[in-house]
Image (cartoon, rainbow, N blue to C red):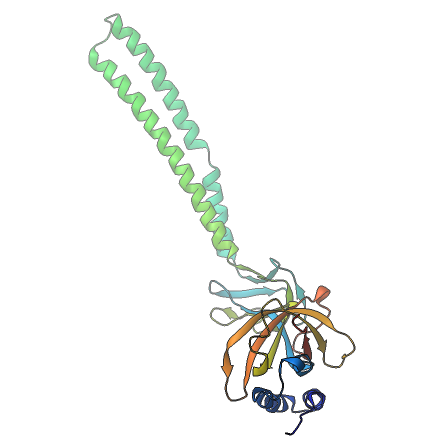
Length: 290
C-alpha cells in the first residue's frame, strides 16, 4: 500500500501559491481514510484559513435627505455610538423649537387655575347665600356649573400640555434621525457618498469590526465530528508564521461540500487594540482532543 506523508501534504498547502486547489486535493485524500485517528493531529497542522472581520455593515440613512457632513474618512477608527454622518436638518430644528415652546407654555394652565379658584370661592358664597335664603336655587346651580366648567377647562389645559410635550419628543426623534451613529467599534472600510449628495437607499459608509476576528477554515472530511465548538486552535497570520494567536471554534458547518470533500469551520480570535488587519491569509492548527 502506498504511504502518504502528512508533512508533505501540509507543505503543499502552506507553500503552494494555489493552496486552495492543493487543499482540496489533500481533503479528497484524507476523505478516503488514508489517515486515521492516530495521525489526525498531523493532518490538521497548518490548514489554510482566512481572517475576516467579525462584523461588516453598510450604513445608510433612515430618512431621505441631503448629506451635510461626513465626519469620517476611509481608514478612520470609529467607536460605537459615534456620530459619523449628519443630514441637513434646518426644518427639523425649527419644528423642535416650535414644539418645545408649546410644551413649555404655562399661561393656559395658570389661567385655568385662576378661574377654578374663583369659581370655588363663588360657589362657597352662593352656598352661604342660598342657606340664608338670599338667592334662588338656580343661582346656586349656576355657581356649581361654573366650578365644574372651570375644573374641566383646567383638565383640558393639562392634557394639551401633555400632548404638546409628546409632540416635542416626536419632533426631537425626527431630528435625531438626521444624525447617523456608528453601530459598532471598528474601521471605516469605504465612503460611498459625499456632502451634498442625496442620502436614501444607497449606503453612505461601510464599516468593519475587527476585534474579535473571524477565522474561516475549510476542514477535510476526516475531521468531521472531531472538530467541535469550543475547541482551541493556534492561528498563524501569513508572513508571520512564528507568531501564533489563540482562537476557539464557534461554528462547525454540518453541510459538506461534496466537490472538495470539505466542511466549513468558523473560529473567533481576540484582536486587542485592532493589531491585526482583516483579510489576511493564515494557517490554523487545532488542538488535539484529549
